[in-house]
Image (cartoon, rainbow, N blue to C red; front, side, top):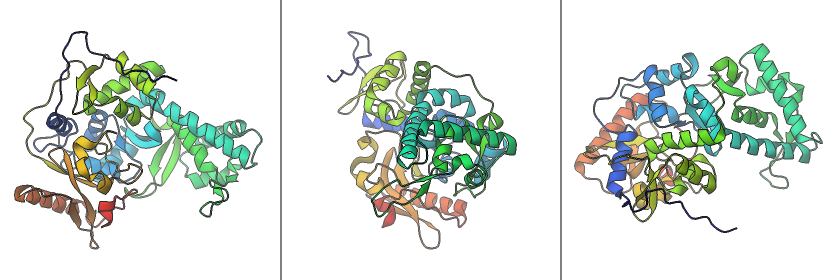
Length: 405
């Protein structure tokens, strides 16, 4: 199959604008709420505002959204996000882009569902059905999944929030195991029930409700989506893709075509169409081509800043082409699968990592010289985070090499 050319979305004869690396870093600082200065006071009411402006917050690691908000909202406490998630329900956890768990606004669920989650759900359902048949649990894996899924939803309607274990013990329809790695020493029999919940969550039928663990643990009690949030009207897939890419470019642009494809877990064809549908403007980057929203201007006069971001932070994981903010440190702050550990930022660049020592104090692992003034600012920020954690230990799900030193 021939490779399709990247569309030129600028007007014929129009000179393409150029965005320097410095300009991109300035935009990152302002649009990702990482600058010092007056910001809204923290509280549950401001959690959805930050979340929506970044489209979503990474939540695969349960501690990540809490630490991401601490880095952006002065005075933020874990209770603020807990209230937004479980009391006010102004944000909700949802499986979406790249089969990743996110914190999103309920108002955004219809577009996220159509543009990303439906794709994830289809892939997960296909794999699960195949494993059901391969394990001999049922001759028709898709029929088994339909029966099991209906049983889960019906039970949650009647019983209210339930843990995965409670559902498995209550429902015979969820019985069954499979070997994820037959013939391998690290394989073994695993329950199929959690994968049924994954499919139902990706389809938007159930959501993670009350959490039985603390803010650094994930022990959700599942609820039906209709019980937890007000369902929105479905959105056509093409309209949803365009709407979500428009929102994303407002925060992450300029971005390359590969960035768009990767972030949304989609195909190049999907990314090209979404960019074309919103009339994205083609711009020149340092050694590549990128896209911004029409009329989106550069950000100037950004003051010096520094930040400590958690593993899998939405900014650190924001782009596939990362050299402009990672530089030579990629191998130290990302694992081999591209998952980021906790990072230290200065003026739009990653300059190191952070971890906790045996006493729970935050310590910096700087990978380059930063100067006395910046070093002092970073040390102060580390002290602030140490005090905020108050002895709570953070264990990143994907620790980077720099964090392990």
